[in-house]
Image 1 (cartoon, rainbow, N blue to C red):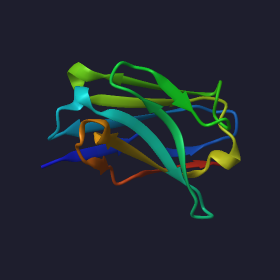
Image 2 (cartoon, rainbow, N blue to C red; image 1 turned 90 degrees about the horizontal axis):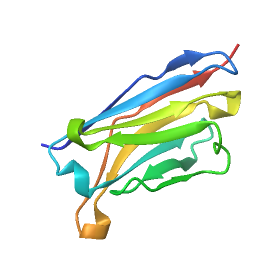
Image 3 (cartoon, one colour; image 1 turned 90 degrees about the vertical axis):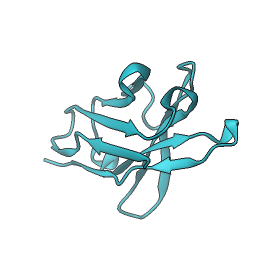
Image 4 (cartoon, one colour; image 1 turned 60 degrees about the horizontal axis):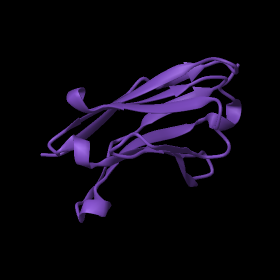
Length: 118
């Protein structure tokens, strides 16, 4: 059974930091590209950051310089370090495992709420 379990969300003041974690099981983690998406209160889904099998990263313009995605293949973990958080970062954050480049499936976690507010 494939599972992606996010953790680390919560309430933080503007300018603060959070680190999201995603624990993955049930797939050959190292062959999957991993990503963090978020769904805003306006219900728009946005790709926040992604990291390929060989650790190449991409970021949404809105988070460049503030967020960092990383992965630990041995632990089957992916992380999103979020610094200088803004109210507009408030969203439910989802972890994804994308195996489409290898004709494998795409999997999603259940999401973790991040709220940035004073």
